[in-house]
Image 1 (tube, helix red, strand yellow):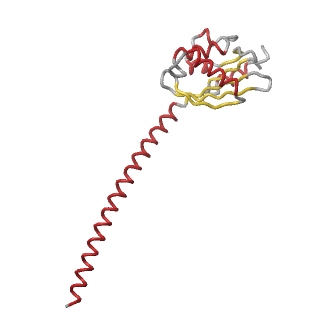
Image 2: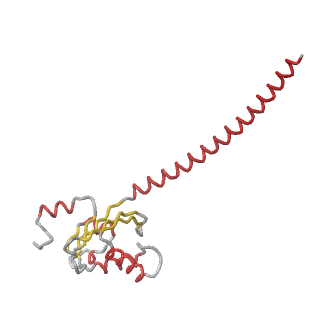
Image 3: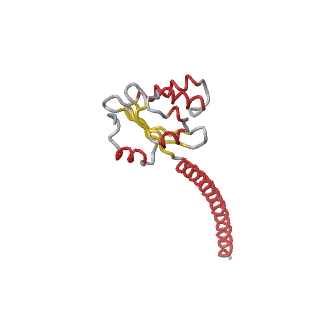
Length: 172
């Protein structure tokens, strides 16, 4: 049992959190992870082993296109700089497979690093659908407003004609 593992109970908790969890030492080597970490990131077995440098994992993700188009080394370094520069961060990003991950990064007081990954694809899809529905509703409201404005204009004209006709009748 290492300083990063408190036994079977702790392992059960880590494995059943519903998020991919990885902890890296102050030297940025993997010291603890769960199966969902490997699964959500689509990592090969060799990159999920204890002792794997964080840089190797980030390079793999960059080469695969998880950080977008561009120079792989630059994308990987940008992501590593992002991880190291912030005390904690929350990022939402697409994966190479089209799913979306919420990535939380936490620097611990002892200089270790914890990164958690949650699949938020369903939430992102719902948000997109809601945005489409909102756009559709806004367009319908504009159409209805224009129709009502036109109808009000026509009613005002008809009222003006009726008033004029009534004035003409009262003269006789």
